[in-house]
Amino acid sequence: MLSQIKDLAANLAPRLIEIRRHLHSHPELSGQEYQTAAYVAGVLSSCGLQVQELVGKTGVVGELPGIGEDARLLAVRTDMDALPIQERTGLEFASRQIGLMHACGHDVHTTVGLGTAMILAQLGIPLPGTVRFLFQPAEETAQGASWMIRDGVMQGVTAIFSVHVFPTIAAGSVGIRYGALTAAADDLEITVIGESGHGARPHEAIDAIWIASQVVTNLQQAISRTQNPLRPVVLTIGQIQGGRAPNVIADQVRMTGTVRSLHPETSAALPAWIEQIVANVCQTYGAKYELHYRRGVPSVQNDLHLTQLVEAAASEAWGSDRVQILLEPSLGAEDFSLYLDHAPGTMFRLGVAFDDKPNYPLHHPQFHVDEKCIVTGVVTMAYAIYKYWQTKN
Ligand code: NI
Image 1 (tube, protein in one colour):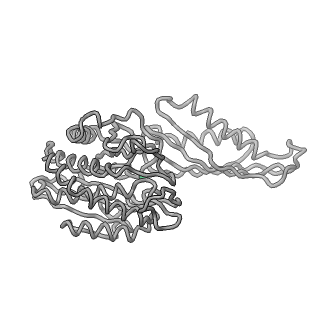
Image 2 (image 1 turned 90 degrees about the vertical axis):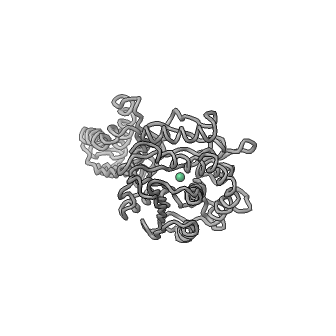
Image 3 (image 1 turned 180 degrees about the vertical axis):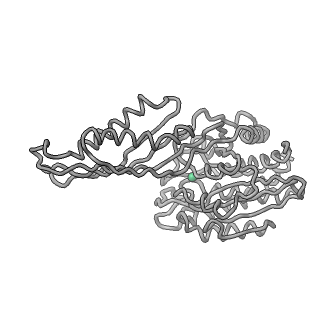
């Protein structure tokens, strides 16, 4: 089966590169993936899948029915949106949209999803159960997964696979991560409310700037002294505003920030813990506060058995020296985690680095990929799907 999948992928490679270049030249912003979605739907229909458009606003779902021997339903999730970045790769198929670029590899993810669907449709051996391909919009704004889920795409799904490009792994290799892959990412907004006064008479005022700086310092120190160092927490205050004149004590300071954590228990406890520190500091110095803690996406926790399955598929396909076990998670965020509230799943990393050219990080205006990664991605995904049906129900 593996050699059949590899042969099909090799034959499809020129077409897949054409698809990827088309997507790369025509990036669309999160939630506006109309052309991309229509294109994806067209490719899926042409390989005989049952296609539903406008799922999760601008998402697409393609279903490849099995013969019904196995009631399980496997989903494959990819994302389609681009970023508001002006591309500087100089490639002949560079973005044709000013200020928009596929700088996070979602063009590659979409191509891998399509290529996997093409291969499974062409295998000539029907699968025992159904595979549902999810092409989601708006991953960059962490909205698309919840839109798709609201429209019912996870109904009946028993396992879900996904993939993300990784610029520090060589093209031709994949990265496998057990446990936490990405962080929970939440938003924080704190307003410290003091009382204005003359800059020369601090005892008659409540200095919101000084108290806000105590809040920031306390939060940072409290992380190092009260949080388990093996369960990382990153709190970044990225914005601070307050005060109007050099000789007037500020009555209000507004701060916004991002809070990242990996462990679900830590994540659950963070809002109350942060509020306690803010409340205590403000109370000590007579200030009031407002705190808004907005949950973003949870941490992606890769399922043990499905991760073992993808690792085995990749090792058989490429040899274990081209399968890197990633020892560290990322503190980036990924809304794939929202699907994992409904079914176990795993996301693998797809190496895209050139071995003879400089490589750039994700979201960089010169980010580029060695396109041989596409075949690596589709074979790994298609073979993992094949192997899924061999596992016990
Ligand atoms: Ni991405």
